[in-house]
Length: 612
Image (tube, rainbow, N blue to C red; front, side):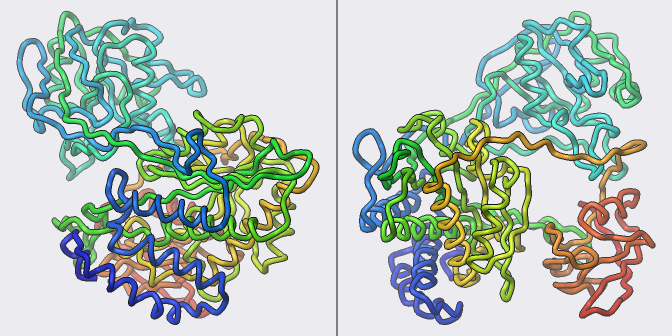
């Protein structure tokens, strides 16, 4: 659609989208009324006319009204305190960094963007205090390490190294929670620090000491001034405070030492200054009252209806097998699968309940706002629920249920281990609707069900898998598998109906993530092949390649969508973790031997790895 190129639309695009709907129905082979309605909901919500349903935009209000109108037409009650379907709340939409932001060390002012930049989660409090170096800012009992144990940071500015010791990463090479900015900042804040300055670790060969670009698209604030500073500014702090160099301190930290210390009489002073934009946003909430003895208990069925709006695409691009950076114009991100598909499922589950036998327990149907910017809608609901939270017996979340692979009949369900009886229930209902269940016992934390899990509500997330169009402008309605989405919708209805009619109540279970024991330091990953791997264990040999990025290393080597990687440099590959481990010691420019299965036959490829 041409309007996407320029990141804007006019009234003519509404007529264009409407005329396209019958074509999409035919293209997707929609044969049943449910499939047709499913596709129709997606077509409207993911049309250019709604501008990507960005939080605070006119398009997301149109989407909210559409959902409320559907709930009303179905015959559901408004569930909010004011007698409407809308649960409003105020949130920060974004922040714009101003040139008034400042930071100085020992009276010498730094340069914004060159020497320092405030993090988007920084508060705007002014500070001026002595500086304490606090290592990685970590409190890690499992490693017998506490960077705050021997220093007093109350009222001080803390200087903290980004990242963590390499040996703390898990067996997949993923950094632990101790490397997260949030963990470091809150560790300092909880001990009374006045501000946090974070500096990069030693750059790898060929890399520069780059400050993170300011991203004001999130309104989360951690409640303390927090700045990213250059290594040169940090070295001045350390030298004036009588400490070793950053490299020397990092070597000691990575070797297991604690090297925290006050930096003499060095004072750091500054303030982050933003222009902040706020707006009233809203969840859409409807109720179907139960008629049984447990009518004061509730099953929640939910999906988020926001998406990314109009923004620059976040894409990894290659040219000649190497990473390139390209400036692109803002584009509409329609979010057909993410998550117009889940909302389509939500509306149709509600219709099935309204047209069926009244359940014993009541059902709450929830369309969440602001999921993409940090689960704000579901967090607000669980903190301001119109019904007692302890009376919610289960939460079923649909997020991205519209891209089931053609010919496949499987769905991933997260959280089947966090509620008693969940696994057997989902298996039973899956067989009834003709779906194979890929169980993930852990609930995961990347969608709205996580807000309910945090409150110890047994919760599940239904998901048909990642794809190459995730969070890209190409996630459009013409790629939706309406038949697959309709089948998942039936599954969610069957599961919700069982939870709402059975006498017993599922109990919340804490699921501990299992980790393999690792010997030696964790690998560091510095290379990519330019492909989208398959994450689900489908019982087939090797690791599936869902998509090969055009002009990337894998593409240049002749790899194809649907190949299965079974070997890299002589190392057997059975899953994503084997794939990551096989290249853990490589660097950009290395050529590795990759064996793939294509139509059951082995094929040898030579892949020259690129920088991530």
